[in-house]
Length: 508
Image (tube, rainbow, N blue to C red; front, top):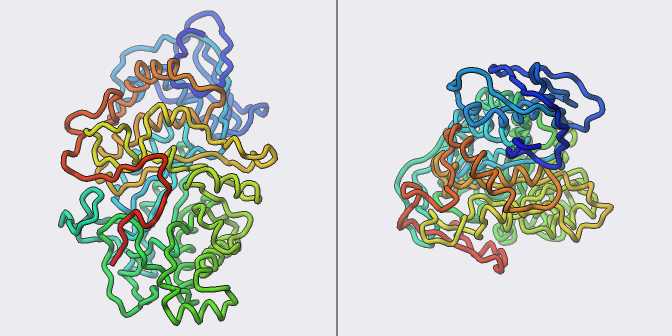
């Protein structure tokens, strides 16, 4: 039907009807239950007498409203009404529902802290794109961002660092600028409630047993070398400091998880498990003895043992663990109901789904939005692979080599926004949009992708919406001068390269 050339997910069924629809100018939309629609589905009716929707659930009602908002035009995305009078829309019926259950985006607030207001704004942007998962990466070597009242030093010490590596380099240079911040429990409860009203589930992540330098700076006794005084790490990359395997350390982190469970109702809780060097365990007599006491083949299996304890704790409390795909290599200690986030390509996704794990696809080769958007020298801090808008739009989360019987194990996909080089909300805007708009359509709709059909919709209809929302996205022709970062080094990679942790800086 002419006129519905918005960034609507596909496939949709549009049933034309004569006349002109004059929906009310307010934010209310009458919603009626619809038992014949799948989860998150909606049917939007545009009639000469107004607009109303039928929805399978509250999420479907939210998406119906978002579609109506799109149809009204960019002015509907502004914070205050600027368009006098009603909007004239063609009448019809739009029936729509998502392809995948998990349509997510990770926001890394550990490397560079984003204020509560900035996170709420990011939630708004996810909701406007019909995405339904915000994966909050709350802890890492460079900062601890969630208040745990029982362990106050996690935030009084672990939430602050003395400076940051400038760009990506191998030298000692740092910017000398202190950085930090954290969320109180009430801040996070507010974020969770705000997101739920917009159909978004917030999935928290507490990364263990690696990526823990900030926690060790606060509580050195958690580490393999408790007598070593550490600072919150000022580098990017893979730090060799890991947790020790003492029962007291397990109890510490199960207590942390209990606080997280009180705040976040998400059925899935992230426990990390990625990039865990084993050298400290292997060279430490206490760790070797501990591995032998536990009946492990060697200290390297402490990785899987620790993750298994965290996952079991969550399972006993009615939740499921989400771990990066390294958990598949961690000695078989992680329960079968753990969700695997496949980031090192799609091979791990196939392996996990075939073994009976639910899977979320988030391969760095395809959906890491902090990676550079072109190979032009003006791209700011060019790291990772070139992932152009068209590359993201053509991505299919279902690996072709996945057996038919395992396809139901693919919950969906998730874009990643790692923030080592995104130190402001403006930098996040530039890295994320408009590629996240393309990703949103990929995870909602099925069918072939046609750049010639998508790009005019994006350029003529959706970019004006982002303008109205105040999003400082990357222009299709390349960055504005103020979006460049001249002289700040990056670390470009090629798609033919194989990921190696040794490629990245390590801690002293």
